[in-house]
Picture 1 (tube, rainbow, N blue to C red):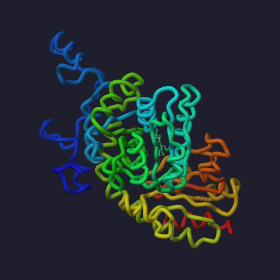
Picture 2: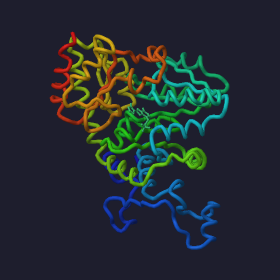
Picture 3: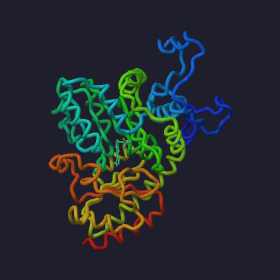
Picture 4: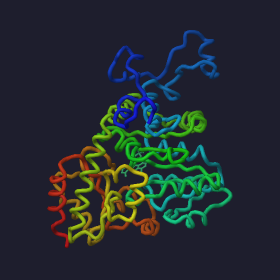
Length: 395
Ligand code: LCS
């Protein structure tokens, strides 16, 4: 957290914006403009040459978008943040900037389906190969390191298996071999976990999820050291151009003000639902990092404030039983995405992770019986009532 604000809850609201600089407007203005006028031709030239600070064009920078970038950077303890049109725009801008043809990436065994798709595309086009590694043992990682290994890419908790990766362990190995560590912090947010404080080089986010929190925006963020972020800003962000619109940046800034309140409630509800699911005869296994019986619980306690708001579970049965269960729900929505106020449920094998080939999916633990639940901030008793009535036909 920034020196100015000792507590995360205060920083979440105040970082990145000073109303005194903008006519006392309590909430940030939306600078809905594509371009910025220059007083003179010489001033335009100076701005393009980087000799004078100031905005030029909204694909390069925008004051409303900058508020979000500064807020997120301060919360993540990063020097600089960059906002993108989606989580995938952020991830692709970072990974393309950090690699060149024939490099190698080591990734956690399990990740969001479209990130898997991106890594497969980078392999097909540029021979940038990725090894998916069980990162619970240092030796598993060490064995896969090659001279051309450039990046460790980690999701923790992993979407959708909810496995947690020991960041301290992975970062120690990376430093020894001079390899970048990129952490997808979407499921945790800086309120629960701050990988840069632990030595990671870059954090990426789908701000579509908990950060914005209301299911009304698609957005992404990357944050890290100033020099690295400036390099990304000047290359893959500016020239590929997946930037965030000012209005969408404003929505994320607004959503973030209540992140601590929402996240505490998500986590409290997720723990209650975990306890109930664990006792149900139709459930084989529940995966929630905040569950004291979970294998990753000690690591969660070491690096996270709580287990967050998403869990997954395996039911007795396969795809058909999983689909029947989802179809029996009454108010819980069948939908991908997560981190919204509403409880959302989905079937990763046929939805978010369907793009991953069957064999690889099995290795990652994404079976046909696995269901992912993004626990909302409704009363947990109502969430459980709906789940339990839909689970009735499962034994
Ligand atoms: N990283 C993680 C961990 C994600 O879960 C997602 C999206 C992304 C990155 C990409 O972010 P986006 O471009 O959508 O903003 N995850 C989704 C999911 O699990 N269901 O729907 C989207």
